[in-house]
Amino acid sequence: MTVRAPAGYAAIVTAAGRGTRAGGEPKQWRDLAGRSVLARSLDAFAGFGRVVLVVHPDDMARALRDFAGGVTIVTGGDTRAASVMAGLEALQGQATHVLIHDGARPLVSDAVIRGVIDALQVGAPAAAPALPVTDALWRGGDNTVTATAPRDGLFRAQTPQGFALDQISKAHRLHPDNAADDVELALKAGIPVAITPGSEDNLKITFPADFARAERILGAAMDIRLGNGYDVHAFGPGDHVWLCGVRIAHEAGLVGHSDADVGMHALTDAIYGALAEGDIGRHFPPSDPQWKGADSAIFLRHAADLARERGFTFGNADVTLICEAPKIGPHAQAMQARLAQIMHVDPARISVKATTSERLGFTGRREGIAAIATAALMKA
Ligand SMILES: Nc1ccn([C@@H]2O[C@H](COP(=O)(O)OP(=O)(O)OP(=O)(O)O)[C@@H](O)[C@H]2O)c(=O)n1
Ligand SMILES: C[C@](O)(CO)[C@H](O)COP(=O)(O)O
Image (cartoon, rainbow, N blue to C red; front, side, top):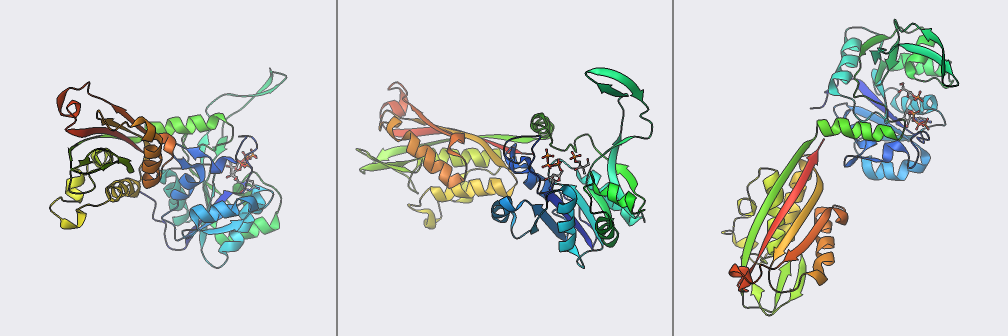
């Protein structure tokens, strides 16, 4: 579920920082359990009529590649406040209220966003989520406690922070200094700010260890699906077989309604299985003449697209071909690459391997080829 924002509400997602404390590639562009931190942060605002994404000039190309269409993308400044100002300028005359969110807070919940909107809707001029400080507070230096400090009335600030657009724009213009957040500027401008419920999960990715923490939180809420697939095709007349999208010369062909790619069929069924969507026959009935001789890539692509449409990413897939011949080893890498290409996933997440059945059974008697496959899908 995404929050349906009232008419006139817009969001600004700030993502122009360099993430120096987290190190490496700017944190908002890094992967978090299969999707970028920023994609997750933006998703939370999909129900807003207008969203402005503020990025660093160096990131404009990838921002346009990943997010063009759904959001307005502008370049930010050297400080967070300057980046917010760039977002506010892009919204002038386009909204009545704005929620300003850190692109580095990918786990913000609908409840936190709704809390801010509800406070504004009942008349608060500004509202922002926060958590009361619960730990005792000390002052210290040189690894030594020098004093204690009262924690009463202290809160840890979070985002999104919500305002009337004209008021927060004016506050930014009046105080163009680098405040820690927009609430600080609102207070300087005399705007009272209501505190709404924050959430421990709404962490800001700041230090390297925050990625592992965010992954743990996502893991606890992760929808993980496993599916298996099994298929068999008999040998018949022919001089080649199609296996996992690769044509291999062979003394016989495989008999089937489509191209009889037994490996791809098992994998396709594994994905349908993970989605509880039946099997290939349900989506591409063998009674339908249009699938006669069809390239099985059509089936695999359909299953992979269906998984993505439902919000899943691929953890991995593993295919085992069971036959005495042809030899699979020399082709395994090409098969892995072809499956990955069809499914739009990293080849490192796809495995293709083979075994004989020690001359036992129908595969052992070289009457056909069997394949089993497993697919793991994840949604957080
Ligand atoms: N010039 C800046 C600085 C920060 N931000 C954004 O403001 C949010 C919160 O800032 P912070 O965590 O301090 O991010 P960075 O400035 O990137 O981190 P660091 O201070 O470690 O470099 C982030 O989403 C960040 O991308 C921004 O849009 N423009
Ligand atoms: C708005 C904010 O998230 C408040 O917690 C802010 O971005 C904090 O940034 P900081 O640079 O880590 O203080």
